[in-house]
Image 1 (tube, one colour):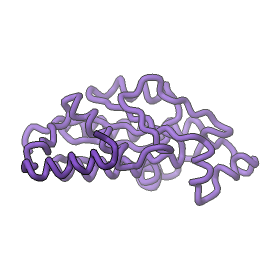
Image 2 (tube, rainbow, N blue to C red):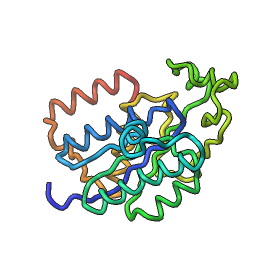
Image 3 (cartoon, rainbow, N blue to C red):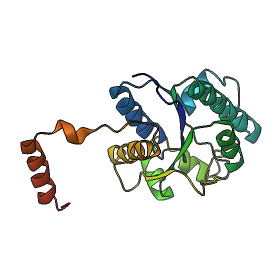
Length: 203
């Protein structure tokens, strides 16, 4: 596809809130549409770009600024850059937003009790018992974005639904052309879909 619009899609949310899962689904859909996209996942960046950084506030800020820098570089060169990192501090997210021309923030919201239940490594339990210090959302702040472009609720919607809502917003903003799925259905297929939706109580 020619003349692709570069932009940064920034997923923020607490550990286990579904940032990477939804980011990967959005990445897959964008690639299916023939678009160039790169995902900068918090854990991957720490292994490569930010090796040696710890978890002090300064080191976390440095890590997030590095992700922001790469997202800016990619988006300026016509690539869709997806950042998926906790990025707990509003001031740093604002700084990155100000730097990048096309910036879309997605807040992955999830109740703490669901995050604890979901946490296979038991990190939340360890943080609550004081075993882990400076854990975001427990002993360290997580500042929820006041006005994100999209808020997804990973404790009450599927990752697929969340990804579809992100895609709808990108289309609405004009960053991604519409899939025009409507045109690819025959009348018979449309009727089948409508019947199914009626049966499910959606129509």
